[in-house]
Image (cartoon, rainbow, N blue to C red; front, side, top):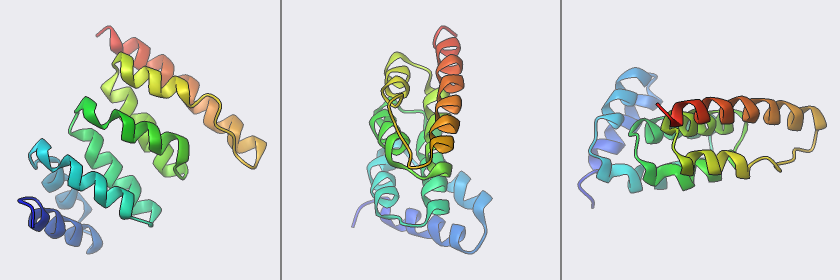
Length: 135
């Protein structure tokens, strides 16, 4: 059992008991070394709300090591998840994050209006990340 299994389980139980704020802050205050386990929890989760929550926790650690995961979520996730991935990539605002955003330009959805919405959000995210990159 890892050093982070117990606190992660505790805070996820808080989340499931609708104590989202304490769960969020508890998980974001864990050492960055918990990120691989948080990533595993994200990948194992099937509930879109939990995936959204975990992805937010992950990017709030502000570690560039999570950029590939954010890119993956951006290209494959449900609406709440891809929006969260965009938020994380904008917050990180570094060349690698901007590259991940750019690589999602070709993402297609079954419904054209969903593709249009995604691309509109993506365009804005790229602009924001580019502006933040120089800050």
